[in-house]
View 1 (cartoon, helix red, strand yellow):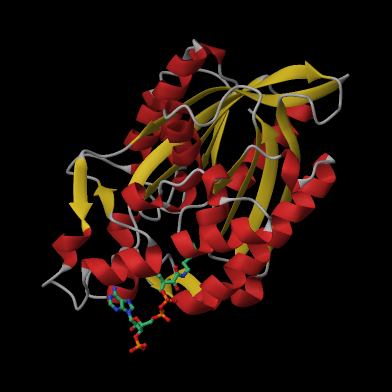
View 2 (cartoon, rainbow, N blue to C red; view 1 turned 180 degrees about the horizontal axis):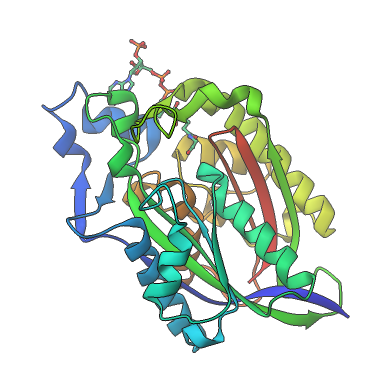
Length: 323
Ligand code: UT7
């Protein structure tokens, strides 16, 4: 008998305010054609007054609980992946815990930037597999609109806000790749590459800072490292790419998504793509894609998924799971 961390609910939240590429024209030296062709992004959502990372995370969590037919009282732990917590501390996860009315259990944030949800999945899996908790809410939520330098055309057009959540539950499996739940994980980081993608603020500067990125350098690392980590995770799960139903990648750039799928020998038809509508929502992008993929009828119970992401750190990783 093997304890598996099985997805029993998924949900997401996107702010109402939608900003089309054309809205950047005239404000900075860019146009819809460049943004679309270089990144695949057509629009993104931005928060309005009163919306924060924790409020979006709570909305996504409530949607996941509803999808699972559970309430906050059924949850033992919350792990929130974010780089844009409401405050320096406490964690946004504890704010979500309060907003959900949870009076027990524990909550904490994970900060691995765009790869944050992969790290959250791996940590939730470890907590469940070791028997410490039965149900974990894992959330990816970001408010990158608050750390964008609106004068920088190389970053401002790329990011969006939003949140996605999964409810994971401990269930018994037989230890094979036929089991539902998380089958394998692979986590990596290389801090020597920290200056390729970072926010230039924090406690050392007394400011929140803005996103700074050497996009073409990150791009080069992305295709190579994402295919490698996905391959490692598939080997650990004892599966081959021909077994995969869906790739659910971090949604940063359609060209990275296409390049990685090609390296994994899977057609784009087997990739859940949301980048055109959400932009890059950092740690929120994978749970958003999972929830939207389920809502669209693409991802069904029993499907085999590989999900992968890379971001600031650089930090990257992949997870194989059966939905
Ligand atoms: O989520 C975390 C991980 N992040 C990523 O995975 C992002 C990875 N990088 C990328 O997605 C791409 O590198 C970008 C979309 C950011 C940029 O695409 P690129 O094809 O790598 O373009 P580039 O950075 O090499 O820039 C090409 C040209 C430059 O002009 P020059 O120097 O050739 O004259 C840029 O200044 O495009 C220019 N450019 C723009 N032009 C119009 C950069 N941003 C813009 C813009 N509008 N918004």
